[in-house]
Length: 159
Image (cartoon, one colour):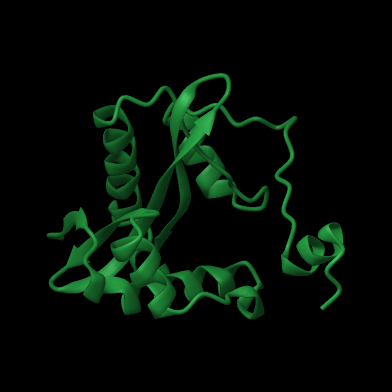
């Protein structure tokens, strides 16, 4: 199978959103996706808040990896991999591995000391893949989120 891993373009964002929704459905969280195409276009291409790589197979986006820089008080600048998604019909074709390699290469090219991400404990295939690639899965760390309701409650804004 021929494919190209490349930087996403603004016009790829509808396909990227489709992939995000596919992942949310896989995680039984379809109702949690609030982002819109316009948000992706603005944040990625006008504001520069993320970089996205896509797997292009004969002109169709079949996978994506979305990353951004973070800062660690222990390591300095890092790359955070927010999501790496391959369409279910294309899993096992090597697209995920190629996107993953692109993310690691991007981190290396930008001189970061760490590439980091979160993986669901139920995603055994991904965990095995990451461990086999040399990644260290931190089982004693918890991911913490505060949603919009929690933010408003925390700052005393009950509107």
